[in-house]
Length: 309
Image (cartoon, rainbow, N blue to C red; front, side, top):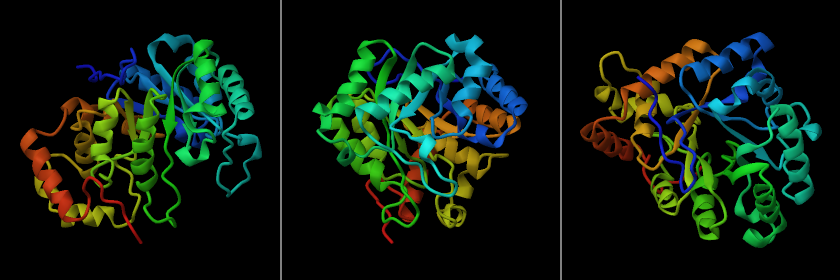
């Protein structure tokens, strides 16, 4: 069996429903990274997501996968200033033409490629882009797209720190709806999963407007209470034999027809293989999917529900 392939908005890209998040490479040795990256491709995953903000990630992808470049869709990000990052502090992002120009040249060099397939503003909410769709950031992205250095452009929406109201879904929920009206991007990356369903309908609308939809955080415990809430909702009663919470939530996200691919990061080959086996099982049955949504709503996880605290 091979991983299911999905549409990516109005583009000609066809990603596997399961993508590989390369942030965890920073925790691995060169040898471990080489094995894991090649295992991802060997397992049929064809969408790899990285960023200049992930130490060693772009460089290792370029070093270990340059010879297999035609086997995968390469997504990275911009607006990044890793040279300014300080230990223990958040990443510093600057959304202007000069930063984007520096980012694209450095990413192409490190990734050992002549083009990026999917180039995303890293964490940019609409208010950060001066001039909106007519401003220098979007215009720079579109110029580099015309030059062939990037094929498609978009935004990876931030989830914010735990201390902010609406974490982790508010930025994505509000951002995707505003970006839809701009009609300049090809894709959006956003937090979504069974435990964080706020953007469920917004994702559908984004896809209807031709956007490729990439989701992350499908199984992440953004709050310590998530495992207990899963049990409180009675979702354990819906698990198939041998299935766990991680697998169920992965298949729940897979059941959303508007999602192009879901990024699940890992630093472990067996974890990677387990994710593949889960996706190969396919979406939840329509009956279980509907019941899961009903039960999730009972604990406050439903479309449009933004956490407040």
